[in-house]
Amino acid sequence: MACKTQGVQFNGTKEQEIALKEVIALLRDTKGSLMPIMQKAQEIYGYLPIEVQTMISDETGIPLEKIYGVATFYAQFALQPKGKYQISVCLGTACYVKGSGDIFHKLEEILGITNGECTPDGKFSLDSCRCVGACGLAPVMMVNGEVYGRLSADDVPDILAKYE
Image (cartoon, rainbow, N blue to C red; front, side, top):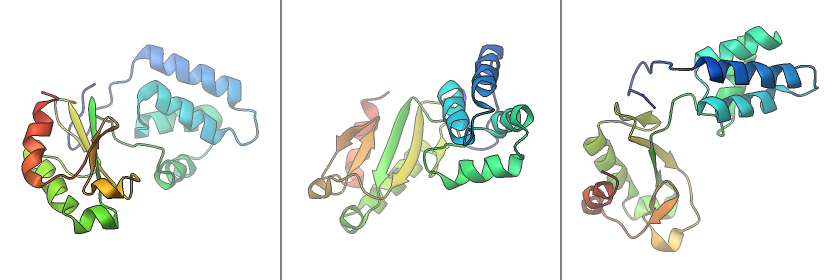
């Protein structure tokens, strides 16, 4: 998966396009089909770049503005690709008051990316979240769902080293 911090290049395949068109053909005439089509498109591509949104619009006749509005309104949809290792830092109140902001900034510094971005090599993506339900372990970050708690910014390099 190739991704950059800015101007992500779309690398869709013909097979993915065929799979998307099959899904659209199957669902297009079903009432309320936009969300299921978008969910399947994200499963196929891993995210919903403008090129995929445009294909959905062209195939369904739904205005691109509406598709983009849905994609940006619902948190389940990603407009940028995710890295092989998806890092999420809790910035909820309990974690934040115990230093998760410093952890997030350390990750930005080391990885050279910010919230919602992916490293140029496609290895790491970085996101903030509001609560993972592990307040007793605050501050918390996760890598592909693995929880790391009671952290300081000094712990970040060692955690990242596990994924090198």
